[in-house]
Every structure is written in structure tokens, then in C-alpha cells.
Length: 383
Image (cartoon, rainbow, N blue to C red; front, side, top):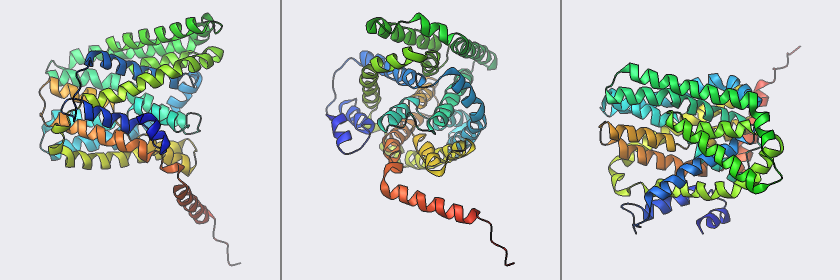
């Protein structure tokens, strides 16, 4: 019903799923006694399917080219979005450990939410979408560096254990990427498109297996799933997209509802204003990140704005990082602040991502582009 309601009014259903989870979760209007573990596993599968479906849209060569071209954008992304989070923690007097955690929370966009938004808005084939994906993949790969070091620092176990975990993570990412690039064709030829049931089980099984191995080795499950999608090509990728789409839609909805269910609304009012201020600031910096990344790729002004607006939601990684803060006893106000912050960006982000589709916004951008073109023309000489 919520999905139909959202589409009836031209909205992404994501905010509605989240609000439903808040209403029926812990501390909600009508708390439900449901299997949280079962729903939590379904939510993990939802993120994995969202990312493998995105990977199916692109080849390994396209991924490598985009990563090379987007590396400077990844650095800009880190500076524009991690530093405000760290500075905000210091302003609140929370200390350097909280600053390290909050920097990660504000840095990384939500691959799952953004993948869903791009699909809902029909932008998967847009010219700016590879730029968005490149930024997301760089962020997810950066988490393979950030999470082991942050865990070791917060646990007080020293830098050496963190570096050893980091080494395992880096080797895993490189190994999966090499297999995807060099042997993707052989993997695709091994699978038959003539038997839909066998194809479904093969692709789904391989995706869950690689994502699970990546998670055990402290690498993002999302990165593993994305690289599986990259490795598949040709008719296999086309048919896999068709048969996996219903599963993706089902489990993606479960992911967003679970996020709301696991959040207690009563914890958020005391930190709502700081979370709102931080969300406004870092959503603007994400728009700047997307704008600069798309401009480097030679994309026109409308595509630059679509890129920036699409990158605003934070999600699964931010919650994982906040969980580290809870585990190791960092400031207790950090967890509800992170939850409120993520909810603000996840609810408003998909709504704001629709702005470029409205006629008045298109007219505003068209006028801006015309003004830029007039300003760029050389002034004729009086002679």
C-alpha cells in the first residue's frame, strides 16, 4: 500500500517504508513482536541485491575507467564530508574518538538507498550514473581501510592489529576485482540462460557467497556484490537482471522497513536540532561533491545537479560506524545523533533527488545555463 501510495503522488517509497518501521518498531505507536533476526537477514540481502543489480548494468572495463577518472572526486568527497563531521564532534566537546566516528558517519553515502532511488527515478542509464557509482564504490572501498583502523583505535588494541586486518581487506578486494576483470567472460559462459531456475540460483548463490566472504574478511558485503554484478556480462547479465528484479524489490523494501524498526523514536528529540544542522551542512557538501565530480566528467549542469542531489542519503555504513561507537563506549549521545542524522538524510534525500524532474526546476536550470553561456562569450571589440 505504501509503495502504491508513493508512486501515486510521484514520490520514492523509501521515506514511507522508513516511517512505517518507526511507527511499528521499538518505541513506536504500535510495537510489533516480530522476528528481528529474520527481518535483519532479509535487510542484508536487500542491500546485496541492490548492489549486484547495479553492477549488472556495467562492465569491468567501465568500472576501472570510472574509478581512475573518479579518484580525485573521491578525495574531494572525503575532505568535504568527513571533515565537517569531525569538526562538529569537536564543537560539541566529544573528543577525538567521537570525531573519528562522526567523520565516517558523515562521509559515506548509502549505496542501497541511492541504488533504489536511481531505479525508482529511471536514471540507471543516465550519463551521470557511472559518476555516482564511481563515487559510491570509492567510498565503499575506503571503508575497507577505515573500519579496521577505526575498530583497532576505538578498542585500544593498537595500530598493528588494525593494519593486519586492513591488509587482508585490501588483498580480498584486489583478488575479487582481478577475477571480475580477467575471468568475467568465462564465468558468464559457464552459466546458461536457457534454464531460468538454474540461472537464478547460480547468480543469487554466487552473489550471497562472495558477499558473505567479503563480510567475513572485513570488506563491505556491498562491494563484493557489486563486483559480482560487474563480472557477469552479455546475455547472462541481461537475463539475470530480469529474474532478480522482483527479489530485489522485495528485499530492498525489507531493508528500509528494518532500518525504521531498529530505531527508537524516543531517543532522537534531544539530539534532533544538532542532527538537523549537521544533515543540512553535509547534504550541501554532498551536492558540491557530486557537482565537481560530474563537471570533471564533462557532464552538463542538469546532470551535475542530479549527481549531487542523488548522493545525499547516508545509511547502512553510517549505522555500522555508529554501532562501533556503542560497542566501545564512545559518547552515548553519538548513537541517537547518528540515527536522527541518517533518518533525516534518508527521508529528505530521495525527495530532493526528484527536484531536477520538476518543470520549474528545469526552467531555473535552463536560465542559469543561458546566463553562463552569455557570460562565457567574448565581448566584441569596438573596432
